[in-house]
Length: 150
Image (cartoon, rainbow, N blue to C red; front, side, top):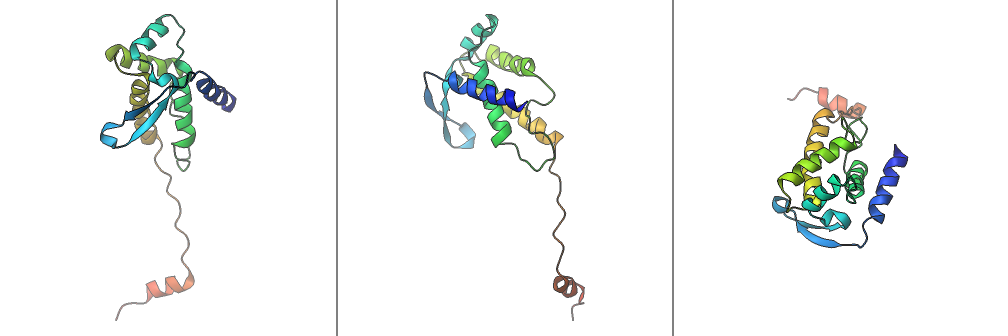
């Protein structure tokens, strides 16, 4: 699985030429960030290429998700960091397809971020934080806590 993720990430990087970058407003989040590569392609282009069964943006989408799995999902949940848990590549692409059919003038990154947002919510609901045991108190702290107030 790690090898596949590495291949997808490398493929996304290689398919990102020519390197296109744009500042995208994150709306209510209140910051801007750069989108690089095929994520800037339109949803209508995604839909056309999916019908031809040759989506050049597919590697970009999978690379985006793989990067979030590695960098964004917390390690303290005791679960595999896999946003696509419970689905497969075809399922992820079906969600992108549905978004792009509904919003053809949007970009692939908009579709991906929308789908990923749902995936993040679902992942966190399925994997709550595992509580850690509190550090043992030192003897002096225990004694002070047990002394009744005057």
